[in-house]
Length: 298
Ligand code: SF4
Ligand code: SF4
Image (cartoon, rainbow, N blue to C red; front, top):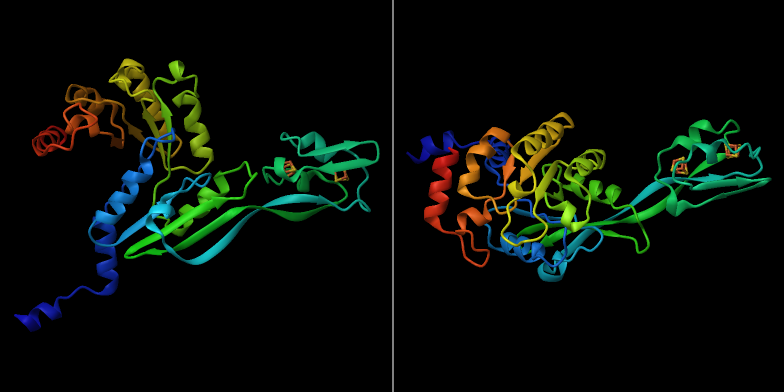
């Protein structure tokens, strides 16, 4: 038996593939601060069995490290390419200024100025300059730090103070564990919150390289996402995301009675906390409700 067992042992590649196929990926996302994302994420990382990777994409204010106290092994600076004018070549034609929609270059008379912090690194000015008068300089966006906290593999990004562009750093964090998903959330009740609509957010999420566009409720007063967006508009949202290469996550006080509509909408991910906690945000997960959900979804 023992010999036969060893003969059938999987190779390292087979084991890695099996791990990948059975891996559970959990994204903890919300647009608001103070909702407990870090508490939930850190708790999951510390209690999960097997290999765990903790990826903190909140590069503007990462704080998982405060709780996990990781040992940082590598630190990588992330830069954007920005233009630097070689004035001896510049003819002050203004073509770079006219092209730059971010007003990162100004030309008046025989004076030209660049504003590196406004530059989005689109590269257009390098292409239109007829004198080849722009050199490639770089602006520090932040650092990606990677290490481990006990048995938990850890990575996060820290934006430079004063930096406005988070996306390049989020991408860099994600690249450290390419199998991770970046979720960008918007709110079904955006009108009462005065925030961006999900339909406006999704193209931005796609352009930013996110994986999932999520709709949740912003105000947790028991009202469901379906009270703010119809089944038809949620279906349109899902289709739009799919066309843009994004997955769709729907959440916001979803109940068992919403499952038929959710099946018709066909999102990739649904938020079920309220459903499996019996509609009480302070309650714990109930096994019988999980069983019921699995039966209804399956
Ligand atoms: S790279 Fe793009 S954003 Fe930056 S200065 Fe040039 S045109 Fe403007
Ligand atoms: S396009 Fe080139 S030559 Fe013209 S103003 Fe800009 S840097 Fe100078």
